[in-house]
Length: 308
Image (cartoon, rainbow, N blue to C red; front, side, top):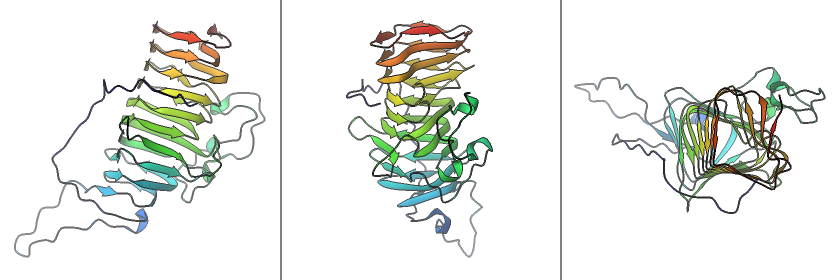
């Protein structure tokens, strides 16, 4: 799902700075690290602070993030990550995040369907897993779910990488990357099953490739712009009863599946190039009031179709 060159422009990105001091704690394991507390005066104790200091992830990490955290350098994720509401995970330019393939030392997510193991045999699309595909087996696959905010902003010359740690990676190595708000920009993300940006999320100027299910499951009002997305086990971008803005992306190749799937909602689909896909764009249910303009379709098995 790799495209050799992206239209790398910085338009539309929002950078927020803050002059508050950041206390950085280097650590090798979240469970055993404690941020150092400032010494208290014997005469006049300081009031209890209303915030927790930021920390910096060490060589390996997993678990619940309860205070603002910064990832930089190389970070090895060895178990599920969950970021609490109101907390920001920042990933600095050039950071390489290696996600442990097909293992999870601390499972945090036990939804019954996602805990199933083996290969699906039912001829349906229940819960997004198709017949003949392995179940998500969440007990042995890592998910990164950000209930707070993600600020992962690389640069054209110093992109972030989020990838499998396997020497022979595959499209089912790790499960979810989901975030409620914030931005993922100028990053290479690969060998995952599902990316799910929520309503206040931006996915911009990334390379997304080698994907188990949907490249971006835009079941929200997220902004998905100027990405290169290719080679997914399902469609490259889908949306179900939602109204995201999908613009300026290069979608494909994806020869066995669709570029874009629209299932109801009122999405804005603008100025995308869809090429080398089994189906360029397909409606699987009648949309509300979609806006399609300026899209280019090249060398697809079929450019557009209605499935209802």
